[in-house]
Length: 334
Image (cartoon, rainbow, N blue to C red; front, side, top):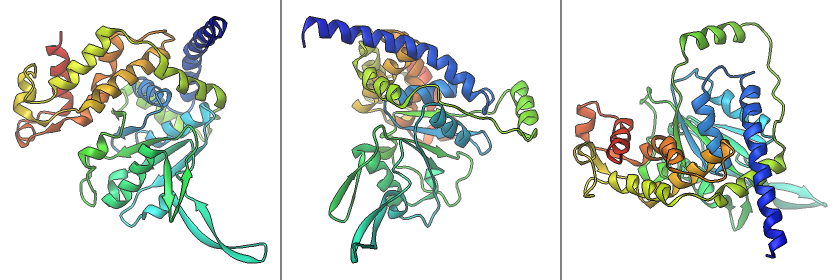
């Protein structure tokens, strides 16, 4: 690439980041028409989207998780698909299957696309379906394509999954294996709204008025930003911090804090530090910054690491949560 092309590319990147900073404000205002509060959750979801990753949303029913995802899809000009996971759901119900159809007077097998063939897919209550069906979705998340019979079908670009999990109901559920949890860039916890937000929710949702969500970013801009985020520079200190956090989450590491040594069976692998660096870059992009630093890493640490830490039975007995372990990690790294 020549000097003039490099300069033009740099100018385009700076312009796109400036546009992103403005768009994030507009996106939050647009989503606020449908969803009250949840600013931190929206930030984490936007970071996931711009990093081209997948996220697991954890929260009790009724916290607008589905509405958040569908509103984001509309505001970002992305196609939206939803799969309600149930115990009898089959892999073909997600990916699609070959069906016999009449073509030019002849019968032939034609691929009928499943609901996974969208830019943004909501996998609702993913832990309610057996591991075989979970694996079909998670394989598509990793490979970004599906194979049916002898043919491979590419998924849309971008293709991203937001899966939801209900933390309070255990009957009739199938926990996600740790290796599958590791496929999610972030685990985002959706908490109860504040009292003032809940008052507004009660007023707004009983008024009979349906909010209209319009695109804030064009589809091409969303794709361009997804291409740009991995190219955002990151400081050496930020990369070192991400790696230290991942390594210190392993109980046999020399720098592991007491909470890790006592309550963790297995810590985050290399994918944890990768996810932390990438999500930090996306977090910087949301602020319109041209580089990611240690503050971005710290901001994303809990969401990027918590689901990659496997706690021991002692942690359950002592009521120690994964978030407590990650907070101890952050404190021990200074």
